[in-house]
Length: 98
Image 1: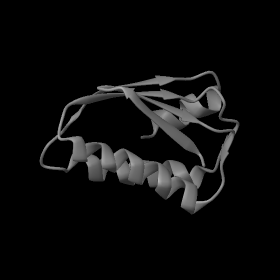
Image 2: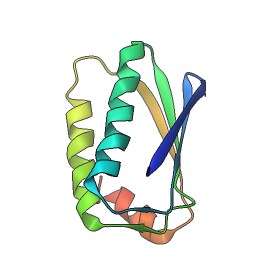
Image 3: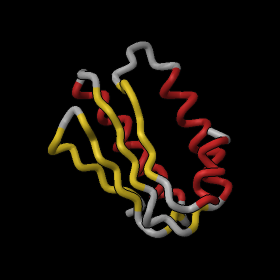
Image 4: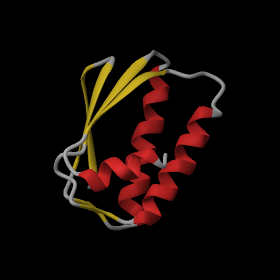
């Protein structure tokens, strides 16, 4: 699993990533969990901890950009803010493209 979601402090949701993202199943698991947050029908904040991440294929940066565009087109926007904790400069540069 690439990411775990901690909803115990809702509306603040902590997303912690593992070392690498190397397959589509992990990516879609990550995005499905994010989409499921909309089922609460309440505003929330996402806090992404990317410190453990060492490798993410560029392919998933493009997938992520497409997913974010899809989320932004949703009629109701429950995501109020997002924070990204970054240690790795490569990961920071990927964020710039999304």
